[in-house]
Length: 344
Image 1 (cartoon, rainbow, N blue to C red):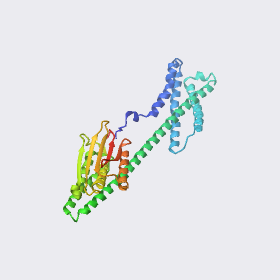
Image 2: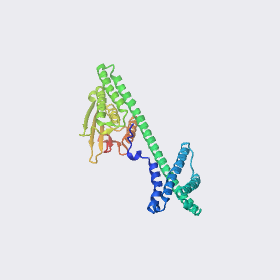
Image 3: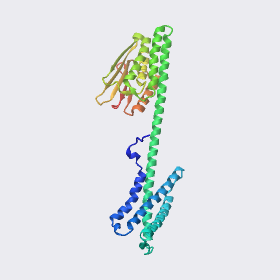
């Protein structure tokens, strides 16, 4: 299976830094004229290869400890720096014996300086290594937190959708029951429309958002159900602006608001009500979707509040903080207005 990650993610950065860091030692010695001293370049190369092997063994030991859930304290790292630096000094001594024995014959005055140098080098190596490990752990923790946040958001959204659909179908079945004995043909037609809405609800429930056009089809099917029930008492006008068919909204969000307009506008009035559905793009790029009905806001309409709170939460979860839902009353009209961000 081909690795589709970017090249920068496929690179083994550990070995790139290992080879670059330890390779700097003989390169620096060469630029300082070490090539003029017989055997010294070989000693430097010996030290670089030894450093790669020693630090890689220490790296593997650290990984094994982390895999077993063991913490490596800075005190332990300090002891390791002393041990590793001492080991490397001994290994470097062997390199001098092999490639430049005349230096060894001069005595051991070089040992304290060599120990300090290798201790410093291994201290720097461990500091960088621990810093990288800490950074990777922080990135993993952040990624895991984001993953859990997305999972929680998705679970909450699904729960809210699960609350919407039974509420709608319960009301629709009540409408069917009201007609089934008095007007069987109208009840049968209502069941056909209800089946269409049910199909849409089941399919759209797998998505956070759906196109406005798809949502409007479900709304039209719902209104057809209620039109059979209320006949001339319910009057509907729809005005969807050009180019807004693909605007994304949470599934069943618009239907919930239309259902409230029917319940508290048409059903609550002896003379019925007009329901207006309008969508338009504003000058700032945002989209306003308004559902209006003749009537007044009922202060203690708990089901209305539940539906509005539910829809607000779903807008927030699906589209972000810029998505809003407002309920207002003006000149005998109750208006529920969804404001969707430009990206919608």
